[in-house]
Amino acid sequence: MPPILQVRGLETGYGEVQVLWGISLTVEAGSIVVLLGPNGAGKTTTLRAISGLLPAWKGQIVFEGRNITCWPPHARVEAGISHVPEGRGIFPDMTVEENLRVAAYPKRARRRLEDRLEIVYTMFPVLRARRKQLAGTLSGGEQQMLAIARAIIQNPKLLLLDEPSLGLAPKLAEQVIEFVYKLNREHGITILLVEQNVPLALRIADYVYVLENGRIVAEGEPDQIKRNRKIVEAYVGI
Image (cartoon, rainbow, N blue to C red; front, side, top):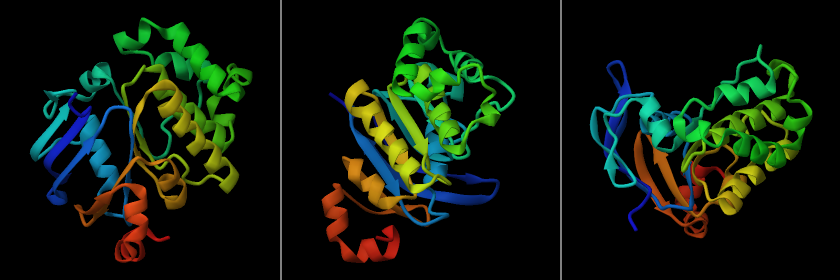
């Protein structure tokens, strides 16, 4: 069975500024893969390129054996890739349930909307309790749960998560990372995770890539990364 995602020699950037310099990575179906590295390493740019928010200059993005490098973002969502960007991206003036329902624009999501809503409300009981509440009045942790829930509504095969614990208190950050783990282990959603909280990320990772200056400088299973003191001290920060 081929990997669910393969990135091959990807180069891209913003305007005339190149950020990624030929990175290649593989995400196996059913796994949690974590991207680590300092600020400005290219982690967010990698996710944006995979989801189609940023065009690839060179290289290929292959999803389930299909070359999707030139596909528009909506086609990638329809194929099964959902992206939760840094900053959550919810609609603050809509209710929790309106946020969830409006996320179900792909055909694959509309077919099972009520089932997905029940899954979301079971996983995040606080969202069920607040489903008629304006999303902008939720706490930071609740807004992050809503952002993840919006992606789950799309019935993804691959979920791209960018800094889901950013700005959260330690207890809430642990709770969000535990939700990510459950999405993978209990619901079979493959995860590609960018996370600033390195110890939490390594706790749930199956495989790790370390980026620096738009290049992959190390990769391996979490224990391998932890044993590499040079990498840990220079790039990972634990």
